Length: 550
Ligand code: C2O
Ligand code: CU
Image (spheres, rainbow, N blue to C red):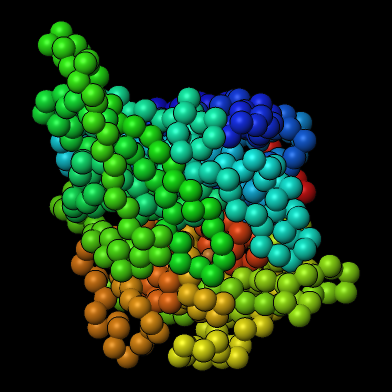
């Protein structure tokens, strides 16, 4: 293994999209950001230098950060933000992961433009468990706002109303020809016939789950969140913000006289409005031999893919249940077979009373809030990990995060009474090596809505999922403890539940939140403290000396 050094200069860059130029926060002036490439087992060292006027922090989404919680990045959780003019060196080792992950800003809404791929190759001389791809291409799905996204979220926070939706979806930063002034801003995937391409799809959108498809081509799903899965064919990939999916694209054996539309458009179940625009790119076959030049006169056919309806929850459930761990000899699924601690979390929207000094324009002078077990998380003003490590939790956080909702959850179609949420900085504490079972239930309070819940510092196994209310008597009997998919972000089905299991073997403070940024902003987040183990190699080392201070 080697050490890979990167320098991330966080700086403003003028970028033109949708007929307008705006100044955005980028890594090294690039949008989407530069890719990090490493092999499993490598050490990665990234020096982040903040040249902008905003506080910044960067999270390495999905990297397990085994005993390196200080490098994880979420602002006010594991570190204070990197202030203007300051820098911080993130150091971590990639242990037991190979596939695609990504990095993104983890403060306010800066991740709308500050994000990029992390490509993790297998160890040297270790083959993929699938045909070796001819080429590998990151596909970053994103959202573009004409307005400054910091202004968008600041305004929403002040008014208590929903923030504006984006103006376009993008593929590798490009909205494509369905948008004004955007024909030249179209992603083109140029391929040769008869080859296998590995597409590393990342959903970096702020607020939209996405369908992704390429006309007249099937995709073979081989990996999700940097864990190999049992390969399966599909025409359409569903991917939530935070998730990554690797697919193999086998090109046609002969160069067709046609172009194929690549399309990406939201899967949206909630009551709120969303950006329902489609991002389009083209799959084009390179004309590489003389015989093909003849076809110039023939009109090139254009094929379009068909995507599900924007709220097709049945497609979503089917797609998600197809995902299974590869669970081979070399890559066994290490599912916890027993449970030490069971949690039941309701996740969703609710409302909270506004304090006198807030201008709340929501219904009845309330504001929309989002919560887990009716607790809407309040960001502390110092980092939780430091407070925990140095035993200075007083006034920063309390350890009474509820294991169950305040009123027994039983949704029958009309909103239950307990829609009021309370604010607080509460964490749940797990002794080292606790085997955790966590059932996440969509509350459906302001309409059923799916929530992509992301856990830092771990992968979990999705042992079960279903529609309606979770039944603690019947549903656990159906859990898959053999080959459940292992990932870091799970979609809680709209009006349904998902059951996760993980082993808390990584000491630190670990954020868990909805990866729809608007829900996170409203408080759909919490943190776990995983305590040190007894042995030396089960403890979190002290922080690096350059860890940003608040
Ligand atoms: Cu990808 Cu806490 O985030
Ligand atoms: Cu959500």
